[in-house]
Image 1: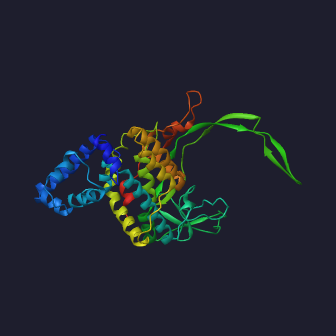
Image 2: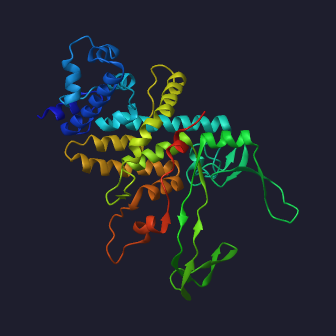
Image 3: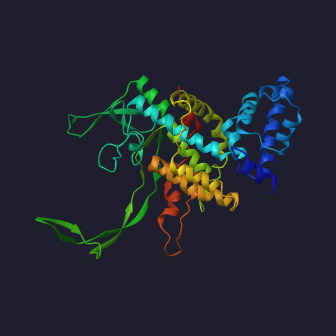
Length: 389
């Protein structure tokens, strides 16, 4: 059995990447150590002391050469003393179990912020009653903040006063004071896309009577059409989608790290996560710390079933890593869509030039695969996703 397979099966936190990826990550670690050694004289012995390893420097050399990967706990200590992003290190070494746990922690933190800010969306539960705060975001994102309806153009925030104005307009928006607006924008992300001008086929169907008991109503008959025409839809901006930063960050990471088969990255997208990781550390540290302080000692954290399935797919040793990743991606994206479908759409439009579509042919291809060309979006500035008080 190859050494990397033994590592996957024997390690409590397996790495899902082959040996050559360990070497690349080891080179990244070594370059960071050499920079610290030149600037502050940090020796290998000092690095080993910081991670509480009492043996010789061969252990550190084995990490640098890629002969073995450091376990997550050791890796966290190495990142701390070398000034590296632990999130980036986890991604470079392929500790996807750890990475997926990050996503769960971020969403947990976002849910705490929703509670603290009295925020919620508009999605109802299956019974037609208000859903939990987190589930209420699925179709709408945040619609209420501090208990009141909220609108935003991405730069300014307003509460909506529930009354008619002097000219009879249904709602009148009143801007927040600067302190409130600053708090909102420090904790929430606003996403949107530009819908390019395009043509659609408009079809009219004849009405028919539908009887249910004594009630008679008119419904459209989809089996026949009475009019078809091509209509030009003008360019427009989508409605803003607002999410707490931890939830938005989790969705963005899931979309960027787990492309589905057929998804084609924009040129800037593969480098974007590398710049995002370091900024994400602070939010993740808060999420981990707060969750550790809140959850009862010894009580196991629950991982969303779709994230569990993503992990199972990543651990399937019968497939190559690239094949495993695209299988896991279907579960990861389904999880993101369950959190907030429109923000997941925004993240995909921003990250991909083309979207994968299963089972289509040249004649049956739908507008879905062309969506990034019709709906233009850019990856958000990293600080808007990760900066908070």
